[in-house]
Image (tube, rainbow, N blue to C red):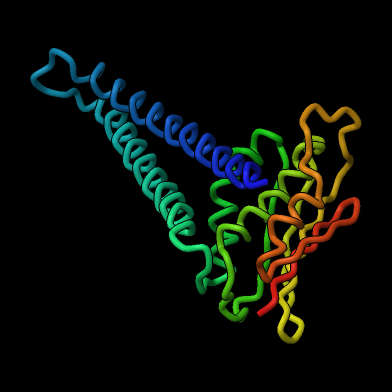
Length: 209
């Protein structure tokens, strides 16, 4: 049963490495342009300076993007340091949003979330929660059509936080990838304070405080 969370980790790592490779390719391209302009020259013509400055700025921009992306991935990795911990829900969702951008862009589906800033800290398994969020989004993406939208909102009811993930758009009639059955995910989370249920275009995740 735990092969599903492991597959989730593999998906995140695969997309992470692809994204970093893209960043490095752009840095290499910009560095190559500088090398072409400067090769064999003792001085740089003023007309060439804008190209060099633009390339240096592009390199700095990509490095900043890479550092930011690696920070999110590092936080995601440390979520697995212990099965249970106290964490902020907004931070966990933000990490998933950043790490799933490439997957969402490839599917041409937009994802937006809006969570209240005053939600209490959650005492649970952050890794399992991120897996459940991924499952919800992935289930929609595997049957999505380009141009669809996914929204996530949250609400607190006494000692319960409800995450609602809604899909807006048409589904692809020909689904080429297997979608994990909901009952198997429910079994994985059964030993936590997290519950998941679903309708056709809505996933509901409940966290007991």
